[in-house]
Amino acid sequence: MTFNTREDVARGLREAGYATDPILVQIMWLATRMQKPILLEGPPGTGKTYLAQALAAAAKTDLIRLQCFEGITEKQAIGSFDEALQRLYLETQEHVIDREWDKLRSSLHTLDFFTHGPLMQAVLQPKPVVLLIDELDKVDQKFEALLLEILSDWQITIPKLGTVKAKTIPFVVMTSNQERRLGDPLRRRSLYKRIEHPDVRKEVEILDIRTVDAPLELKAQAVGLAQALRGYNLVKPPSIDEIVQFVRALQLLGEVEIRPEMRDVLMPFLAKTEEDVKRLLLKDGFRSLVATALKYRDEALAAMRATGEAAA
Image (cartoon, rainbow, N blue to C red; front, side, top):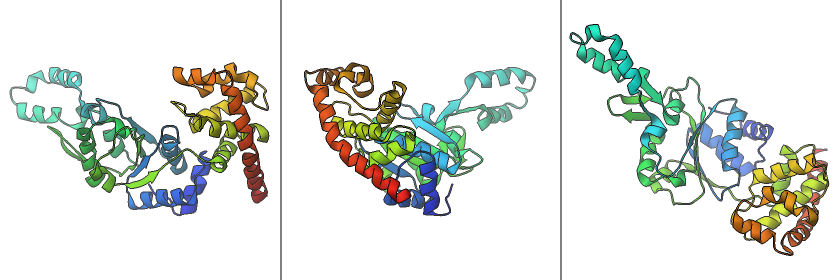
């Protein structure tokens, strides 16, 4: 999977709803041209997963996702032999078992009887896809080592089946929320990019792309509230996508500004833990956030107007 130019990457990502920057565009372009995996690391909710989704949309290809979790097994990631299908096949071949057992046994251990997990699916596609290995920091080092053969040689070795070579080389995006430090062998095989929560100007651009029909002042205040919340020491600060959904909810409510008395209606969009709810329910908690948001709003409005003037 390649893009002809860096401009193709930038344009494709923007059309897919991702606000990028020249450095990230260059890294993504080089990664696709050199067939190198990319490792995106940073706090939860900063758009790492969304970048992989946007890249697949920009390249007009499929996204195959391996969602990592504690205790994930090789079978869940790569796949396994379908024993029920193997038994059914044997039952249909009873008349030849005595004479051709070795041949039958070999035929049982082929891809025809193998249920494909996400990793196997990705390397057997007829055209390159985006393989998203999401939240890799949740797995252990043993599982990490499993990925090295794929990322180094684009092949998967499976007992009884043998080595399966990739039909096409997927573009691999790995994400980490830093719950655990990933090992050096994996890092050396990847291009690394850290993704942080956006500043005011970047979040303005994101909301401009993903909430085109929202009033300018509402988007600016939402950006201000997002910045205020992320500085409020919450357990789970709002993600970029949550702020986008927050603006869409305000539109559905017919609101054009955020007011302190709207706290209880808006709480489900902003607080996702009991501790955070309690903080926002403090006497002046939400009111003070709205006041802080107004300070950021002016900066956001200036950025929006500057963007509009540049586009004109």
